[in-house]
Amino acid sequence: MFYLTEQFFSIQGEGKYAGVPSYFLRTGGCNLACPGFGATYEVDGELRYGCDTYFAVDSAYAKSWIKVEDSEILIRTLKDEFDKIGYKPHMVITGGEPLMYYSDKVFYAVVKWLVEEDVQITFETNGTIEIDFETYPAYKSCIFALSLKLANSGEPEQKRIIPQALKNIQTYAKESFLKFTIDKELVETTAIDEINQIRDILPELEVFCMPVGESRDTIWKNDRAVFEFCMKHNFRYSDRLHIRVFDTTQGV
Ligand code: SF4
Image (tube, rainbow, N blue to C red):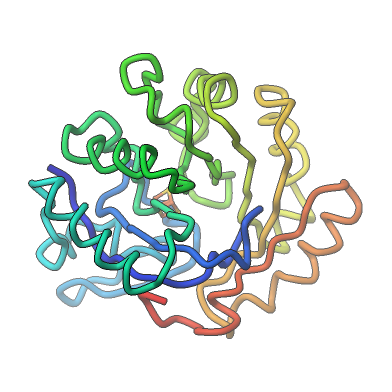
């Protein structure tokens, strides 16, 4: 059993495959909370801090998540969706943290079916979950967008950087790349040292950096600094197209 918070057809807004029409499955729940990312929301009158997908992270929203207990039902829905779209789009499995469910029977059955259907899957992951690629070989055919968290996430290093989990993905996955969400302050302080520390673990992976900001009103405060940071260090700049186009609207 796993939780889905939303599913929709859109365009990948960030990272290496920005601009690619993609079908999104967003799972519910995360093993991190990232209170440093500046999104504020209220639960029962209490102000909480999180990331821009707090509605898929905080279990206070679990009542609105869908419990997926039968892989066949989700597979049938996906077949119908692909028929409506007219082709099998790139699939992005995101969260929360989708790999929390990697060994779940129902979740794996859906991933395996997609791989057998030659659907290209990208997992958007925080890279902290150690996958057993031998027992669950379908993951070898997937792409992993490793959206590792830096100090600005507000999470302690030992929780957000798990070297063995990262090395496994670099070794076994068909493709993986690094994606960092950074702000102006981090650019001016520890970003390069923190990224280089991670590159010592994953020296082969391309680096994409994108600006912190959960809305049009906030993203502009960081985009130029990140843009110039990428030029200086030969990293790829990734914008966040869905925020530019749709602002804070969910499910697009
Ligand atoms: S790891 Fe990702 S989904 Fe989880 S809290 Fe942090 S930013 Fe949000």
